Image (tube, rainbow, N blue to C red):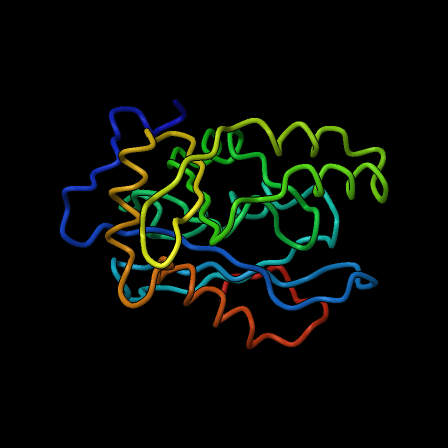
Length: 202
């Protein structure tokens, strides 16, 4: 569903290429926050860095991640998009189905713990009552686990089967139990000071 015509998630390659995204530190009173995307040849070779911006608690994260992927020269050779959860910039929830469709790439979310969907729904309804679409996106895709030590990773996937997603994420593990591309994206994003940035490619 939503893959490039004829494309498959080729987990048999020794070093598949993926995009990995995370947001920078932000203040909930700020209008926007930076987003960093890495192009990584698995497990940990960084080939490119992308930078964008999303509104805090906004509704443009799907569009911005898709824009960054499409603008990258690495899109054609990439196998998937990795996200450390379903939102950026607070409750700027990503529509995984639309991101998959807009980029032609499988989209995989990975978190260390089971997402507390109920708490997220209550917070969105309390603070962003007009965002029922975001509430619906939280439950749009089933969660599954990948067994790693000391505790399993929680995942969802669009455009890839759970087994394909698990196989790809296993190729991302270097030390510890979290995908290296997402760990690196978090480190890169953490180095950006809070505040607006220009919507440009780094």
